[in-house]
Length: 202
Image (tube, rainbow, N blue to C red; front, side, top):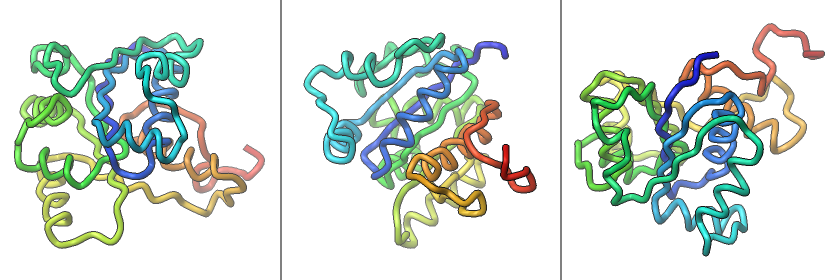
């Protein structure tokens, strides 16, 4: 498969493991990943995954790069030197996983208040693929209206809702279903879950 360039955002919504697994799969497939993590996202790394985040770049090398052939580039929220912050950079698209309601609102209103929101704004203005994976429940009317606004602009809204027809046996089965659906939205091949209609032996 031709190497692609993806922007990935991880925010402070619950479900940081979805972002971790997605980046691992993109790097495993040999793609370039421009990764952005909000401060709240780093807090979720500590609270949900018990990650030691004092040395952030060392943590990312340990958890994400491993021996995968892809390229990982980590960018701080104020580092607008990130290539994906410019429309002239040929980025294949962006996914925010998980996406907090605050980040979703910032994207919906064109705030560009940090690098992540700026890159999302670039995807919108350039007509490139943008996928948001919200992880929130219940949803209020403001949140639903923001999602509808973005959907009408061509953004793929992909809530973190695992399917159960594959008869999940482990937590990884549930995680892989959501990550697999996210990869489907990016048109990146994977074999993370059994698709509807496929034999259970696969």
